[in-house]
Image 1 (tube, rainbow, N blue to C red):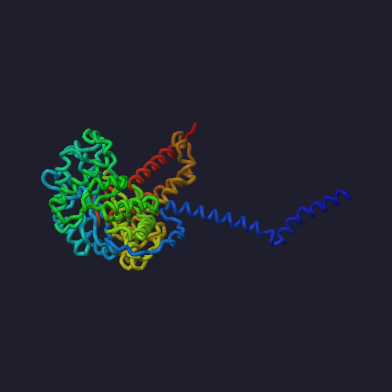
Image 2 (image 1 turned 60 degrees about the vertical axis):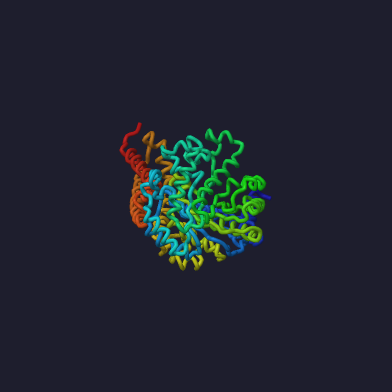
Length: 538
């Protein structure tokens, strides 16, 4: 075979083999399968990046389908945390009827330093504290909506508003931590007796009082308690009993509630030996999405043998992230679903009196504000509706909730990142402005990580004055555009917040969430202007 024939034959084989492959449909299957898998992977990765950054979530609902709705038969109590951010009384009067329509039966109100303490403990009240007349109006408005009021008075830990004061620093359990009070200091009983009595005096029809007792982290640090360091359980229970007796002496028909996390670790026989009075009732609290491994049958049966009955506590806001400004209702719905699963398991084994839906406003007295009450009302509606035995969804509002909130775009309430909700409930406009800010913040963070800033406005460029003028002009225009948008958003947020909160609280929210962006923008503008003044390089 000549060279020309060989070359012709070779060329024919080279081109015809792939052609024959492409003509066979079965041979194309692996190619199409590869393209499909690659496209699916890319789509999911893109969606995950976008949704996780914007606060939305891709939700797989297999676990939702497993959950069987059940009506919770018992008290449904909403916790209002006023520390550092008390809503105006006018707003509370508007929102109480809505809370009642959702199915709540009572309010657990934590005043902290927002109570108008008098006489020798007047220094405990904040400049933003309610007046005595405002306290009366709050209680009256709640009762007019058929909501009982239960005070939550911290008497062991979370006493920063007291122990931060020079007058009471000697009562700290740990000298450097103004959180826990020393249970063995004689002055402790006098102070707590004064605090509890002033608050309860303003609640003449109260049937229950919650005395806290959770997260006692420094017990056994002070000189008095160190002597009994091996008897922490005994010290704890002795203090709880003392506080309870002080209250019962003046209010004999009042039930005393405590958070259970400390006594959860004490075994049954030891608890029985402590001989806790029958008017003390434990509240089992947990804010996780899934908690079957934490709230075990052993705990339930132990409390049955010692107390006879129990309470549950989940959350509708303020229990996930310390600096969250939106409420992720999917987490709270999962939390309440978990509680209902536990309720279904044990409702015939122990008396379950009710469930608290906590709504913390700060993680502690010194922490910044987390998601505000008006932003969390949809989450509250979803969780209370779930307790009423109605199926709720992560990605939309049930009609029972939306009939109360009147949202034009209910999908946006539970599934952040999908536009504005346009709700008509008191505080609905504030929700929309916060949703706008949330979207702005996401876009701003994407901008701050784009290739132009990374490549032409990094530390190297700034230190050495190396820059691309065209790129910096583009960055400058974008930065100024973001500043103008933030100016508009800030005005809208402040306007809506001032209907609900006093100026000091509006300013705090601004300083916590908006001002850091302004500072960063100002820094960028200054860096760009400094660089662009340079026209000669060496």
